[in-house]
Image (cartoon, rainbow, N blue to C red; front, top):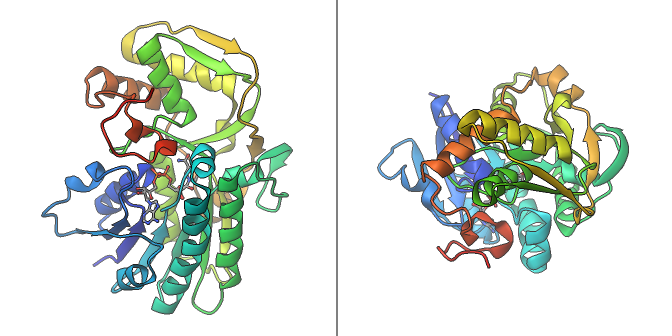
Length: 336
Ligand SMILES: NC(=O)c1ccc[n+]([C@@H]2O[C@H](COP(=O)([O-])OP(=O)(O)OC[C@H]3O[C@@H](n4cnc5c(N)ncnc54)[C@H](O)[C@@H]3O)[C@@H](O)[C@H]2O)c1
């Protein structure tokens, strides 16, 4: 029988898709989450023997220690995620993303887990003109990115013996999830095309690496199933060079996907400057060479899928606060 994987933050945008993929692959899963954005993504597992759900906060040491019992490997995804969310709740960001992440890693080490996979982000690079590899200087432009760097460092500092953490510096994610987010660039553009009939791009020349949820989940499975020795820990950029895009091109690809799904031509407006300072291109040679990781999904296909879910009303009002991390809200209330 395959291991039980502890997915911390398993009710979140990436967590929900990772859990689905792990189950499909034959793993059993324990989800630990405080359900900031609701429980919708995990409700379908009621009565499913392969999935155990713990409602708890990683800032509670006892909850963390108890959650490790009988676990093969751990994926730590829980965090205050995104620059605007970290700005809105700085204390909660430091407590969760930095302090609690150290507690979780130490607890996992003590429990002797096989793999400890930490969700970091390419946002740690912030701004850079070269193609950035894992050794490139870090240039965080938000508290979110700063806390991710600090926790990477503290997790790597306890690597050794049988404890081999794997840091996943993921590109900006896109695609449909049972716990949807509309505060991520591809998803936002698809949503605004649906609700307002157009895509507005601010600035547009800034570079950003992108990665679908399905491909991100696949990278996690590649790490779990790799036979490679990861002594001392590993850091990987997760994404693909062909999906480093400038934002204007992301808008064109979203419009292409919508055209495919609906036949509609969506106009793209380019306005002023971006309020988002991030601008970086990343190289993914290491994960490709060491784990054979390549991507399969594309932005047009994911935008088409999201459009169809909006059209069929499977996502029935994309303006709910629950879809935007900085509101910290699981209510039905709409954004202003
Ligand atoms: N979404 C992206 O584009 C992206 C890109 C790179 C890296 N990441 C990383 O991937 C991970 C998941 O991101 P996401 O987009 O799924 O975010 P998300 O906000 O949808 O999910 C985070 C989950 O963590 C839970 N959580 C938050 N604080 C908690 C706490 N103290 N205790 C227990 N649970 C808690 C939330 O309830 C939520 O379900 C994060 O660590 C993020 O930094 C995301």
